[in-house]
Image (cartoon, rainbow, N blue to C red; front, side):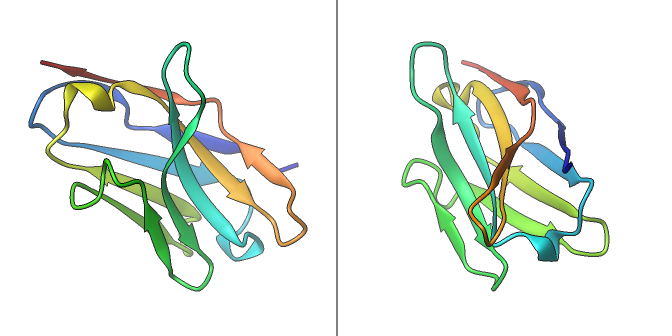
Length: 116
């Protein structure tokens, strides 16, 4: 069983930065894709950023140029650096990992609150 644990959430003023980290109990190389999603009450969970095993990144249009996803195979972590945060970035952020079989794992989430 793979566990994903998010950390780094918190309260920050608009324009500030936060760095989220996702630690996996398995090796990153075992996954096709690692990603960060977010969800606000009443809305669907949405993709924020994704990183493939080949190093390809994908970002939601709303965060391009502000957020950066990166992985560290030695530490089995995937980080999300969030700069120039906006009020609308407020959400619970979830780490996601997808195996080549398609099996998907989720973390429990970490709250990010941006005050305007």
